[in-house]
Length: 201
Image (cartoon, rainbow, N blue to C red; front, side, top):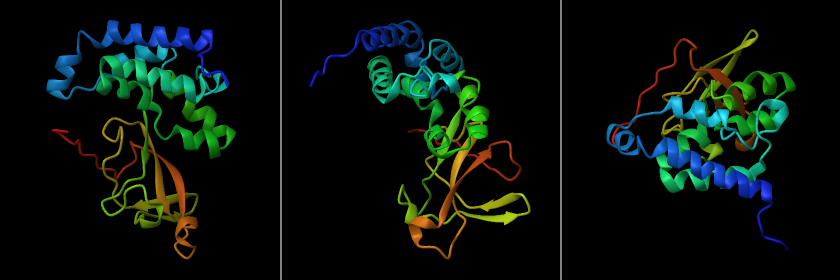
């Protein structure tokens, strides 16, 4: 088995590192001390194909695959892991849309994230349930063509800055635990949502 990176991935590796050195280094200390989020860096990174890089080109991504995305994560994090994750985790939650969403949902949500215009998040963790799906308490009840969702999520990556959240909710409480929930895309502008920024992490 050949473990050597392809020339394309080597170029991606070099580009990602150079981008981080040029863009992260001047602001790294300030961002760390003031817990500053960097949407302008995310936008520049997107212009270089570094946001949602694993996503196929037809949905706005760079089609770099999981390996390419891992390389980007590693190279950005060499310079500043916090800012690096602002870039690579900007598409957190999009994996579920890509794997299980309709074509309409993929075309609606994935391109704006890859372009750096939107940020996604995955609403999984709850006060009494980490990533254990059998412990979710958040409920979604059908109301006409909508769902009414009640519950709490915590420690959500991008929770305070996301434009939408792929939210795990109990929709079929009578089913067995791991068959009882659904993933619902929730625009973060939806009335009733309260967000609290975690400080001092």
